[in-house]
Image (tube, rainbow, N blue to C red; front, side):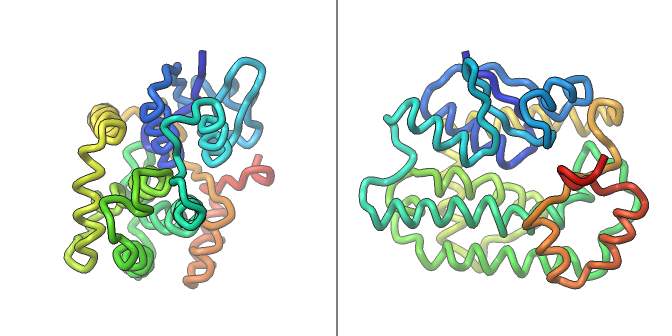
Length: 257
């Protein structure tokens, strides 16, 4: 039996859930970010991050590694296109989604998380800067969408990009400047593995927003790493981040207690 240390709202976990569904694999989901499962998560990933896939004696950490493992485990349907050029493009979009785009969405969405207790407002200009940067990524996708999917056929490129575009839509992104991406987004919503995850996410979001259970998840400290810090500092928010760190609201895996 496959076990997935999961979280409904993590874009990386969403990607892995869609891959598992796409490959019709049964698995047990464990909410790894629930405080009650914290020790269990740390046993399989000392960094305390989701997703983690446990399969027998193997623990696979990180969504990209999990995706590769699942593609080896069940090669059909494949997550990469058949041609070398399209496979390279799919890997590129996987990397863009997991790196710079995730950083943007993470950094501008903190004030919308149902699990956080924040009464402040975003620092001036942060959300606008993030939306402009996100549009740059989506305009690149728009320029390359010459078929129903990013790389010709449904691939990891689409499943990695979709959670972030979904989050941007929630944050107020409009599609009039990226019409091909907007059409792609509507098509993706009808893909069975995507539709199932959207239904699950909707149910979990309704529960989280109505419950306001600040004891279920970490409500103050936020995990910051790599690209998320880099994008924030590159856009001039060093003082804000330093204050967050000084006031104990920052967790840096491997550094913070």
